[in-house]
Amino acid sequence: MPDRIIHEEWQQQWGHEYDPKWKQGDLVPVLESLVVEGKLGTVVVDVGSGAFPISKMIDGKLRKGLKIIELDIAAPAYETEDSIRAKIDVENLAKKDFESRRVLVALRQWLKNKGFTTEEAVVDSAIFSDVLNYINYENVLPELLPLLKEGGRVIIFNAPRRGYKSLFRVEPKGNIDIFLLLRKLGIRLEILKFNNTDFNTTDFPSIQSLDGQMMLYVGVKGSINSSKSGIEAGIQ
Ligand SMILES: C[S@@+](CC[C@H](N)C(=O)[O-])C[C@H]1O[C@@H](n2cnc3c(N)ncnc32)[C@H](O)[C@@H]1O
Image: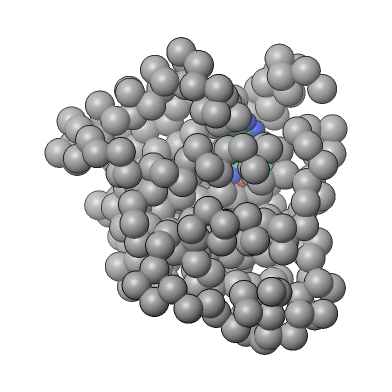
């Protein structure tokens, strides 16, 4: 489907909610634990945030102090003291076109106005909730991850091939492909859940049987201890 039509389709969908109960049950508690443990950091980017960003479902008290940057292809831009939303097709980041560069400069300026550094890597956590199926993440992740600080986190909630198939940019790959790609990009697996159940076995066949299911993945950029987790060892 041409890019223009995809933009229009998402525009028409703007304001929809996408399985909020599921996300509130499975994803939000993990985000809240990360805040409590001081692991979510301060600058949080919510990619493909939608009109009801998952980052904003975090309990209000815990959310205090976070600076949330929402990126969405269909979003009307807005700005408050603690959050900013930019309309951007994240696929264009790789093209480094004028519009994406303009958006990045504006976001950096917003952070600078709040007293943050303007260094390249400025993001503490990047959330991709229910969006990987709709973007060519093999191109997008290498563009976004350099903005993540060393020790910063990538949080993904995704069921490959589940969703609006007509809006898939490319045929989505499975969960294993996703975390192999992340590892290649220097992200170390920290938490892995399928259907809200911790997955801590090295049993590769059972991972394969979960390849198309709803995955919650938390990974850390770089690592003090670069040894592979059991799961990663299992998929060698
Ligand atoms: C299924 S919704 C998920 C919304 C929200 N993250 C959630 O978990 O409920 C996918 C969102 O990604 C946005 N989106 C799709 N393609 C995009 C792209 N190329 N760049 C930025 N946002 C995109 C859509 O506008 C939509 O808001």
